[in-house]
Image (cartoon, rainbow, N blue to C red; front, side):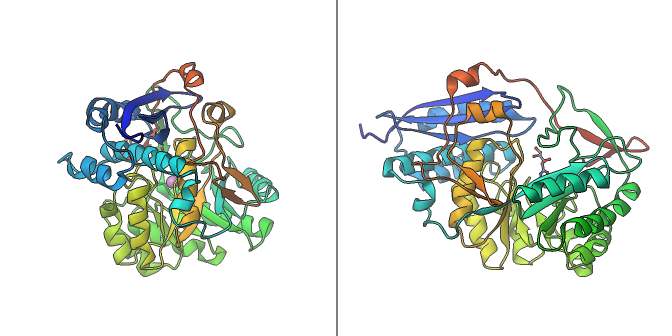
Length: 405
Ligand code: EZ4
Ligand code: CO
């Protein structure tokens, strides 16, 4: 049997501070690769998809045949797309690229065409209950060398808002074993953002990139209003201004504002982005390796986006494990149209379970030069952190209607 034959597949579910699902594919000669399969709040569905439905089909196949295995799992499932399927395929894809690069004795970015830049610019999350707290946090990020900073402040009159954490550096929205409930009021939120950006420009100047996540909570016309309000402060982007199921909504926003738009952290395939890209309704595509079918599929999305000068801005919150972060950095270093990479620090407990070669310096990250992805999982340590059910919160309007969180 060839040395690269897939001999064993393990799905590892652990919770070193938060839940992660990790796939490990082991070849006949003991070479192995890891892939991230974490789908926040729905982890066990992907773990079962992999263990019960994918693993039996892969034993005995040649790990080198990445494209064929991708097509086999995508077309072969008959049921196409969807976050569970695409996260499972992503995990297999990442693990296979890890194996191929390890067998080649190269860091993965070399196999993807080599470094197209010196590093990947990342943005950090500055947040606080008040504008002053948020500006103080942003100054701290600037002092650490960050060139791009996301600003999220509490909204006066709302008890708890997405993006505002109790800890300066660590933010974990999946914080309860049943979804916690928060209140939302657009008329309170909308006027609160421009003053935050005004204060940030006063405090930090114009050289730093400033970002903001709307987190799907507006209608197209409300998002257009926000885009216009922020124009004087030149944001790098506003993110997820509206839910993207209605892709035409973005045209309406575009008709009113030149503020750049980023979208796609919940996308799971190129089809979610096709119209937005082809009609040039967005500026940054945020699809990720883990939720959008792995490196193989994300390269396809980036290539389509590049035709229209749309750049990447991949999702990189804490629910994307260090395996995803490593994969994102190899991908980002090698493609022509990299824009920025989100970077939320993992806790020490998470980093201990996933030793990695990637590093931060000068506002940029580099995947490192270890063969493969340059990230591993300490299975014995992972076992000491068993899965704990955890959900993202939900939002309700003041009259009790469900809203987007
Ligand atoms: O709410 O990753 O830009 N980052 C984000 C994240 C998402 C979580 C959902 O799992 O919007 O904080
Ligand atoms: Co977001």
